[in-house]
Amino acid sequence: MLTALLVRIKGYAAAAIGAVLFLVFAYFKARQDGKNAAEAAQARKQAEAIKQKRESDEDIDRMGADHIHTELGKWMRGDK
Image 1 (cartoon, one colour):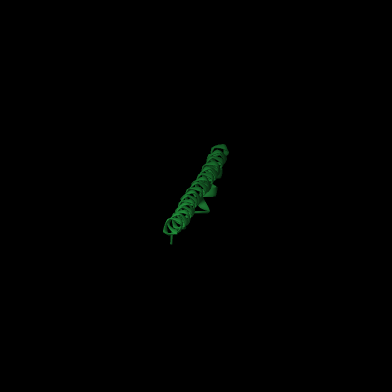
Image 2: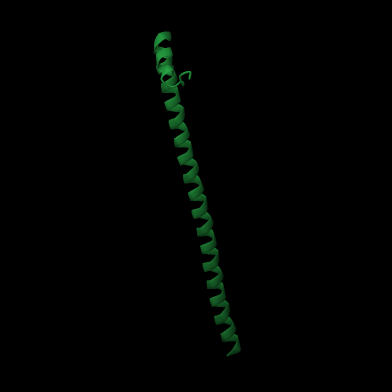
């Protein structure tokens, strides 16, 4: 009778340990997936910023000197 009880307890303990290991694995997997998703989102934002800067630089390169001076004058403060 005592042996049967110990076997039963060992079975429950093994199942509990298995469940805990599964939950720990799932937690770390989800955490890594979230980190990977955040890194991918940051890389997309960085690529978009690079693309916008390149487009802006190309626009400026196509402008003449007078047009660049006029456009930059809109952003500069006037003398007071």
